[in-house]
Amino acid sequence: VSSSEKKIVQFRLDEPLEGVPPPPFPLWDAHLHVWDAGAFSGFERWANRFGVKRFTAIASPDVKASLEQRGGKNRFSFALYLPIHAFADHDTDTLLSSLEIARSQSYDMVKLWFGPRFLDFTDAVKPFAISHEAFEPVFARIEEYGMPVDIHVADPDIWYRRKYVDAERYRTKLQAVDEFTVVLDRHPGLRAISVHFGSLPEPRHRALLSSLLDRYPNLHIDTASTKWVVRELGRDPLRAREFIVRYQRRILFASDLSIGRFDEEEGYYAKRYWSQRLFWETGVREVPLPFSDKDNDEGPTIINGLELSRDVLENLYWKNAGDFFES
Ligand SMILES: [Zn+2]
Image (cartoon, rainbow, N blue to C red):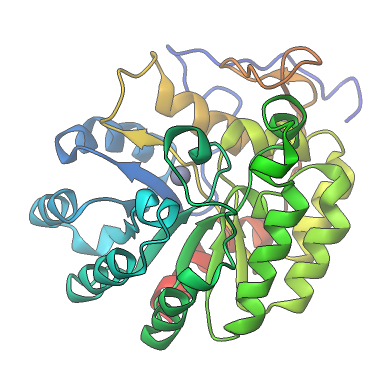
């Protein structure tokens, strides 16, 4: 970006689309959490302003039913959380019965969460690994049903340095990724979205992520969460851009927004969508992320845009989710 092209861009709640071009394509948000269907319309007004028209919602059966009743069934696909506590307890039967609920209620996907911090709020059976034999019947059944999984494999590198120093208790990130590949090797038919850029958006993991995508054709990744992905990919925007161009059919746009659970900060939805759209579509440099990133100990997080081409954006924003959920 030459200095003549540089202009000051920053998020403003009274002009929430400032700096963001008109959406080149409709967007499909492939990962958001809806805790309360009543809160959805407030969110959707914001989503529409940013061009987000379709939603893959992680939602309970009640929330799913009421979103469907409000019409526009074709705007949604749904994922059901398999209970985290059942993973912690190695409770195969509970996991299998949740899977039956997902199937009988026509969910499109199941969500699995393996953040190491769950060891702090459950009495997890140890040692803990995604590849543990207690989960085998569950993955086998998921594969048999042809149901895709949305899976959180690990957390930011920064957390392993700060919170998960006890590697025996929490396992390292590479162990977690390795255990996930054991599951993928056992179940070649399993279609997976590994969220948060495969938990590997940090520049030092680029080669690893690339080798995983090459090795497992059914593996996809998403672009949630905004601060983690924007911070890490933005450290080396040229290489990040190259990576995305290369794997453009395997990456789904996603926010990980949480709707109806917390009292949201002002502009919560707008700030995330603004940041991501600016990041993917423009070549801005060093624009401040408009919300706090306590994970970043090197100073405030900035947005260094990747300026993806229209074709690549169309894949990330729309086509890949369409192919994934409608195949
Ligand atoms: Zn999530």
